[in-house]
Image (cartoon, rainbow, N blue to C red; front, side, top):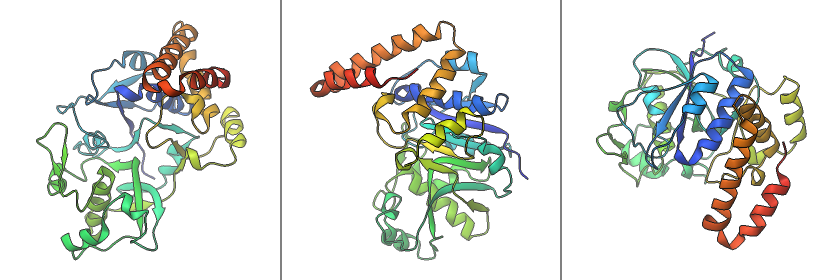
Length: 307
C-alpha cells in the first residue's frame, strides 16, 4: 500500500468557480489531507485567499507563472521529494473516497483513460498522430491505452524537464509545444513520455479507471443520493472541455450544487456572497459573452438553480 501524501489542483482565473467546488468536494471526504493549488496566471492574476483561509489550502510556490493549458501539473510532478501525489484539474470533484482505492497500488504512476485496440482510431488522434510518432521513434511500442492527464497519481521526481526536451520549450512563457506535427496536445506529450519510460523499464504505471466523464453518466440519481448518504463512489467525476461557468447548464449539476452548498456553508456571509457571484456571472455571460441568448440563459439558469 502506497500512501498518497498530497493533492494538487491546477487552476486559473477563468475556473475559480470550479476550483471552489473541487476543494469542497475533497474536504467533504478528506478534511485533513494536504491540498495545494498550482496557479496559472496566463489569463491574469486572481485571488484564492478565501479558499486558502477557509479550507486549509496552500499554494505551491512556482518560479514559472504562465504555463499553457495542461502544463501547471508538471510543477508538482517535477518536485524532487519522492512524495506520492494526486494531481487533478479544477473541473473535477470527488465522487467518494477515491484515495483509499488508489493507495492499494504501488506503481510510480496511476493513470485513467481508455483501452485501445486500434491505434489508428479517432480516439488516439486526441493524443498524437501515431504514424508520425512511429517515424520519430521507430522503437516505440504502443501500450494499448491512452490516459487523460486531468487526473494522475505520481511519485514526484520520477520525471524531469529534460525528459520532455524534444517536445517542450521550457524557456518560453507560456510554454511552447515542439513537434506539433507529431503531438498536438499536452496530454499527448505526457502519454508518450511516460509510456516510453515504461517501455524502457525506468518507471512503472498502473492503468485503471478511476474517473467518470460527467457527460457520460446516464443514471444520475443514485450518485447524488450516495454522496449525501456518505457512501459515494470511489471515483473522480470530470467535466472536461470548454464550458460556460453556469452550473445549471452542466451535466450532473445537482452534484456540483451539493458541493457548492458545502463550500459556502463555511464562508462568512456565504449565502449573500454566493448569490452576488451568481448575479454577476449571469449578467456577464448573458449580456456580454452570449448576447444572442442572454434572456434564455438568464431565465433558465435562475429557474434551474437549486439550493
